Image 1: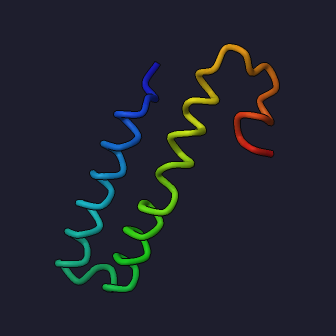
Image 2 (image 1 turned 180 degrees about the horizontal axis):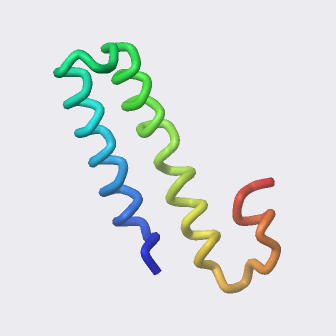
Length: 68
């Protein structure tokens, strides 16, 4: 499967690098860049936990995976 913890971390790092480029090129504001970085920092643990729940064969109800 394409989604795993490493892929999530690598995608977040790539997104930060892309936003840094956009910021340096004047395409996004410093605030937008800061918000993105803070969102990734704050949400990473939940994204990784969701990935663990998704991969857990004991969870049959998908609402448990997504925290619905």
